[in-house]
Amino acid sequence: MPGTGRQLSPAEQVVERMLEASDEYVVATYEARLKRLSEDRRRLPGHRVVFGYLRTNPRTSLTTHRAYMDQLEDAGCDIVRAERMAGNDLTEGFFDLVDHMESGDVLMIPRAYQLSRLQGIARRGVEAVEARGASVEYLYGVGPTGTA
Image (cartoon, rainbow, N blue to C red; front, side, top):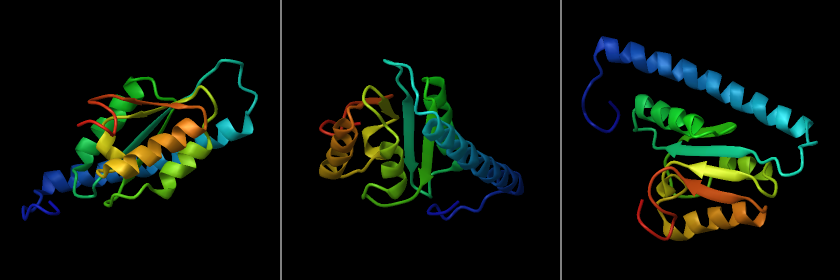
């Protein structure tokens, strides 16, 4: 496994390849849902969209990554944006998601550090969401000013 010095068994390699293929499907589904949302801007008054956002380090196992995605979907997210990348900066994918938000929408994140491990940058992400009139909720822990 990357970063651990341990090699994957053949069975684990098959599982990882299957999960990678499912991630490609998830990206296509995400893009299709965003397109539909963009085309149908005639939302009913008071109707909110719950967006999910997830960023894990590429060294995190795909199984864990998928588990977070499933938890966001189980929590009622209409659209989930999932990324596997390292770094502390807010990503282009995050801002793409925020661009589709309207007043009353919700951004759900499993843990605050999945925006950024740096408190100031995570706070900027929350401010970007709130500037659109949307709110941020966390599945676990507290917001970027606390520990999660």
